[in-house]
Amino acid sequence: MHIAIISGSVREGRKSHRVALHLQAASTASGSTAEILDLKGYSFPLFTERLKNQRPPASDTLDFADRVRKADGVIIVTPEYNGGFPASVKNILDLLVDEWRRKPVAICTASDGSFGGTQAITSLLFGLWKIKAWVVAHMPVPKVAESFSEEGVPVDTEGWNKRTKALLDELGWAVEARRRMQQ
Image 1 (cartoon, helix red, strand yellow):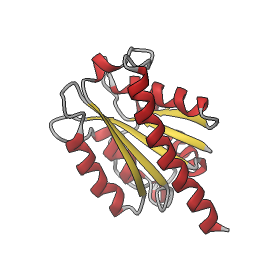
Image 2 (image 1 turned 90 degrees about the vertical axis):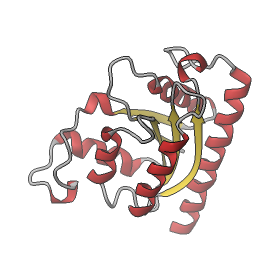
Image 3 (image 1 turned 90 degrees about the horizontal axis):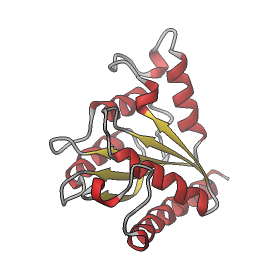
């Protein structure tokens, strides 16, 4: 299974990226391949048009769309800002259309607070459903700065490995179900 992990924060000093690093390590340890699509590195402009209507589309946009299309499943890692998710994540949801259709997607939210970005999950779910992505699991990460090192190593290894395995197992199940439906 190949997983695209979207690291959604573009801020300096971002902490949710720690979770993306952890998910990449856990994915590869479980036998999958995983790549981080870091929105900070893409530096997309503010959304003006869907990819399929851009003339000509930017090379970064084509690269991003191709990586999402080729992934068996996607994990969106996003911080929660003021009860929602950042514009950088909304930008990529609006940018693509066909790439999201029936794509197995897991959501991982992170915050410095004790609720772990659960309000962002609700907001993100609605948008993903509207574009027909297949949301299969979610994992909130409370107190992210206390829970993960800058390198993505969890402080409570046993607890986070258990939660991460559950997320990856659900994503893997959906990927396999999608494969069988496409045969």
